[in-house]
Image 1 (cartoon, rainbow, N blue to C red):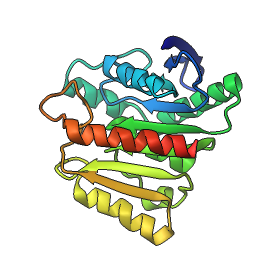
Image 2: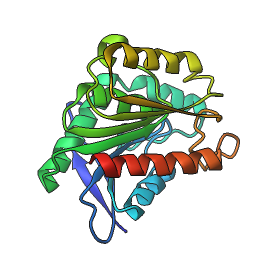
Image 3: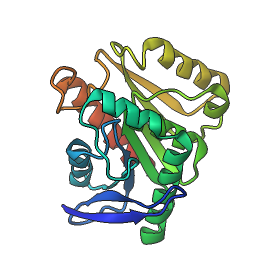
Image 4: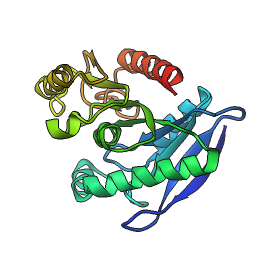
Length: 221
């Protein structure tokens, strides 16, 4: 695996993205969006896992170098990041990727806050060929109905934040507007994919979701 840093210009100032590439190949690119903690070692580890599967993974730093030390700080940082700013960073990341490797379409995924942005980006930005948001918040129907990107939405039935009611709202909108969304639900808590948090990590669900998402990206990118 090779890693590098990609410079990203945005309307609110410059930031960077962490890039993980396989030693060979990596023609398929996945944009990886951070949790509310920031672009930490866990997100970089996931990027490395994508590289091991043959993808180029690019994780833009939506917080511009800041990391949260505890949930209170993470909450403040997440609420201080506007949807407009986050989407602008993602849009410019996609454009930077396409300028480098000419990829027509990229995949996008993310967890928690990153899932919110991944789903929103799939609804509102061009150049995305597949999306796999994990337990992110659901945008309003007027945003959702724009979705044309094949999407897998992954959630946990024991999640108190992205709860079954929110997931049902997404599923109902998908049925109403014939959206290309597959809803996949696990008997798990919020952040069940995060193996650095033993209080919520669910190994079986995480491994199944990983196999599902990597296969989905391979088929759609």
